[in-house]
Image (cartoon, rainbow, N blue to C red):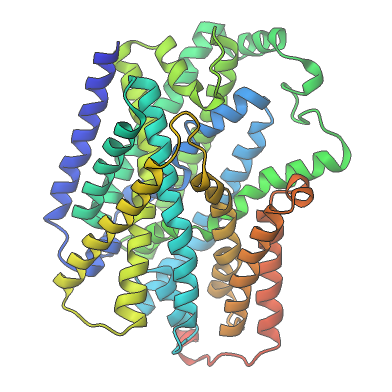
Length: 490
């Protein structure tokens, strides 16, 4: 069993390395390294955006939540689908058009150009927020990949972390955005394959959806709301639960590693096709993940201990060894597709937003690409050191603590500002700075006050506070000059 699983997984890793080598030959300029020269087709753009937005959470975390809590996990899936739909329909095309006009390569690049900030304050503040959150995110993905590999293949946790991180670092460092986008597209196809095959085999074993519901009804406690969309809650508790779960979708407009995909598509007119691909992928993938958790609850004969192990355990129990190996590789793909994207965004923050722009250094394009590769290696090595310091028996340390803030922190820092900046010409530089600071601060404070964090997911108040602050401060400060802005937005 382990040999067959290992062969399938190693074949997948080799494929990623090959993609990195191919992309290396196409990466010559700084724009190539970070935006693939703005040449992506809608299929690669859509699949890459969806794969990088969901991470290992899609194949490990969401099935684990469904396994532990029941069909209430469908609310999480709905929130994510709504966020995905909003990104593609309301934000993607406009972001591509305006960032193309300003020739912006990163989100801080865009913000500085959009608000004509000669002081670089916007660039530095946004770059610092991205660098901190993204480095922590990369380390967390390394930890998660080490945990999954060590459990599945019986290898040492530290060796597993090194293997997963080394492959990600290689193809990201060599191929830049070309490699990341194309490997993410491959990983997205693997993920969707696993998210369809595993629950389908489970349905067949249980006698269809009706058989699944009958099995779950016989082994779960009705009082805990496992098979109820009300999840055993009433009144205010139910309302805050639903707002928090669906509110996860508010995070999508504020994730730089997803937004850069929209900036890299060949032309804005291709975005409609990308939207159709992306939204369909998200619906199938998210609901497939929930059904994996529900099927696991009905099928698994032993207690998995950690609910996040149910996907690989279910694959091993239901599928032939070679196919189970592919399914577990799909779970690793989910982690890698996010880690590589976040690694690239973190390195671009240091090179483009500090070295190149904030400090005014103007090396030639090849030197910038070389520096980008070096910084990518340094950021990855830093994340690897943090990941290796985690206890293999309980690898949930400071990295995962920071990751709890990352989605909500990035969403509250950038989400309201980005949406308003694309549609409202009255937003000012002062409003932008105040909104980023207020949003991220609200998330940190809310999360660290247990009464508040237990009441409502911190992203929701953080997003609302950021939105209000951007609007109010903008209304009470001097309007921006409109000449260039009108040309960009009209």
